[in-house]
Length: 563
Image (cartoon, rainbow, N blue to C red):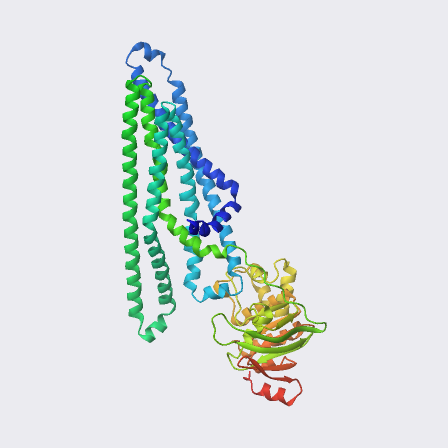
């Protein structure tokens, strides 16, 4: 129980924060819908019975008032319809608001250093968290909390109504409804737990294997593993079908249990109401009302059955997502360097989590304001890791880092399925169109964007579909211009571009770098030629530093890959 409370606490706290008034309103409308239904059924039964009895003689038929009960029935029918419509509208609106807040918090949690990178090692798991795990939590409110509130209110109303006929009668019905209704739901949830876990695991595995099959067909064919992958998918699908079959059986047994409980309650109420009617304490119409109230009182608990079956799945989702719902602590701001410097590193090291060997060790380096450094060395030497340290995306293992505010241009231009304007505003959310167009002009994309019919409203596809590689890199450069940071960190800014486009990007970098400091990780001569000093990284350590104009600078530059 303690673990259940711990796992659900972050999710329940989110429900309490997001749209609390709508959540309570939805639960109240659900209870009103059920109460109106019970009252409608009970009043209808009383009215039919009373009318039949009144029709036995002419005197009672003429004296019987049919207008008030029929008006009450019409009012309850209209009220039930209105409450049902309002309940559907409000509960689903509240649920969507909660799920939207959940997604926002999860995105913020995955924005913490290292969190998104760990999930991207298994993209199918990330997709599963963003879709199925989040959607599974709507069960908690729509199918558990709301039906439970309606069921408890119904049980209380039925107990009070029957208690007016005979107090012990009402207490017995109330106790039976709560014990049987909630007890069967808990039993169904407990029995469904293992099956729900197996179904969740099988569904996640099936998605991952299908994604691997779709994205890695070429590699699977070359390795001769295509048939094995198909068999693995078939085996996973069989496990999923077995889990679904077990859950369907449990659901069937739970439905049978609620049917048996309803029959037992109906039989008991029939016996007691008949005895009360025979003793003269209640009339036949009131006995019919009691019978129909008892019949309708079980319905809300039966509706709780489906939510109880899905509750273990919601608990799995809450356990997976809960640790990321709390906003990540803000990383400590790097101290500013001494006057005249853009960055200072003293004895800095870096080790990735779980790695046996440090990526960087004993890095001591200074970058003056307005100076440009080029990090050179073999692939895997630690150039990109050093940029990550300077950008604040990795925590150092020992040593001290002081730097000015920095922005990083990675090897890949991350573009999203959105407009050009919104892709640019990732760097400066408050920038107006004039500033965006100026940044595009500085990056060399001004004429191309001006020629587009939609201009800044042009929509890009996934991963920037619609732009060439060179245009994507220049769009990334425009983001750097918008950030206006004093320290630029560039990771192979022209990698993968043709010579003409690369020379254009380099030419546009020159004026943009005026007055700024820059660190460029590269193995291409044209990029290193921008630097005032070349820093040779070898196996995570600084092997040599060459200043412009020295023989070592010329020799190191000549050893890099030509344009």
